[in-house]
Image (cartoon, rainbow, N blue to C red; front, side, top):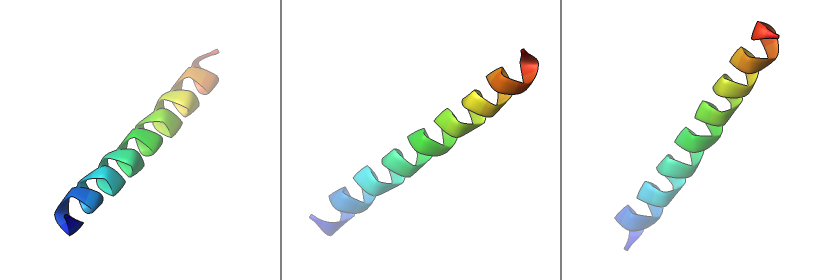
Length: 30
């Protein structure tokens, strides 16, 4: 069960970092 929780936490952090990266790229390309 703990492993599943860490999977969710890891995926959430990954998605957030990816979103921030895409946001920065799209912000600077304008």
